[in-house]
Length: 226
Image (tube, rainbow, N blue to C red):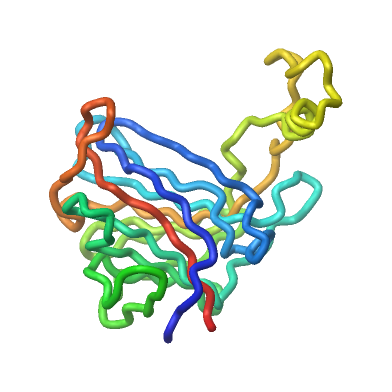
């Protein structure tokens, strides 16, 4: 199955010994409101000194609390790209694609090609998991990778409407205090893909961030079938 046309992307460093978070909600017109729109990408060590790394990809769905979350699009391939030699080109990829209520994972392996085009790496199956509903379902593969896919509550506390009022010049008093602010995303969902991966499958960390911590350089892309 060939996947082309890069829809959206978000770069981040997956920190060993800490966490670095970035968010990028609803800003890609061609993918807005679909699971090709990347909301957040997290990478972190699940506990200090752990030999595993957790990757979390939150994909955009309807973000306001009064709107139901959507479903994973079977025409969208989600790909975690990992650079292991500091050249900012993916050396390993982990892929996820939904089919008939399950999320199928492939990798981590070297991609058949780098850049904007991707192919589903059917010769490198990692495992699969039932897409969760109200109850979280996880699977652990034979090589110790834990898998999850399904709705999760949006992790950010953000007064979205006050923010818009401030940047629109409609709030002369500026931002509200922490006690007055309202969490617009309280109770809202994103659709999450989560993996906990033994570092032995990812190789040695080769980068270092501004804090002096060794890191995997990783970013996420979504590709739509064409």
